[in-house]
Image 1 (cartoon, one colour):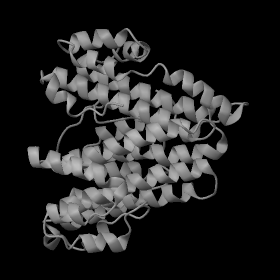
Image 2 (cartoon, rainbow, N blue to C red):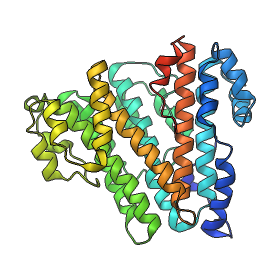
Image 3 (cartoon, rainbow, N blue to C red):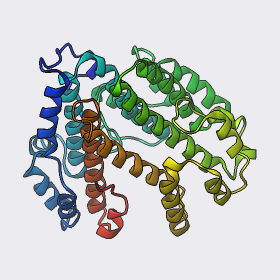
Length: 364
């Protein structure tokens, strides 16, 4: 696997951002199109999917994965490697002023992996080292170290190992374990991680310039998405949750603590959605509510918000020809491609109907 991004000593490219962006535009042309994903979606099974994937740009990483894994684990591992390599290549080529922005934004994948491990250990579930949920980008925690965490026997062992590493959000592990002991709620542990990560990340977005402003906007909308997801989950259970305001995360673009507190008074989802007078999210929330009415799944809201943020980051960033936006656009497009391929592969492996699989894809 590639080394951790933060450990690299590579110098940025001599041509600066314009040179990197020209390289990225060339790389972007190799990304899969919506029609390509449709072709993968209609493969008769996982074996043919693997053969199809081997024939394109994923061939080298899939070949390496197949040396040690088979089937869906090989596919998941190959996709992790591709995303990790993409991040490392961009980081290596970037100017130093943008590297801290990349680290702050990409660390979300480390947090996602840690949450997966915490949930599994709390539930007594055994994780494969090559579990499909692991992204393995390697920003503050390398893929090998993520797998080392997954191998630990208990939640306490996970925390003990993580505390030996010099992570910027290290204190959250001890605090999270203490919070978990109080109520045996995994969400309390995750909340500590979110607060610590976001506090560290916010410190990376200080300064002026279009690059910082664009990165701050993407980050802020991601925080809004998390806060809105929390409101949606809490709207009918606020009275059952101690200190619901503690779940508010700082750093959002449009949703501040005062607005968050006022919305907690909503009695049901219908009132909440109608009270969320945030024009930037109106369309996504409407789509999420429509999906919720059809399926009964609250995750429809998160998916709609994620789809909007993904599309906006890709489209708006790519228009920033000489700036940092092109970098974020490309990385977001790669993230989305890897996620879509993973969804398709797992669906085919479980023999799910293609029309059902398609509903979970974000096609750009």
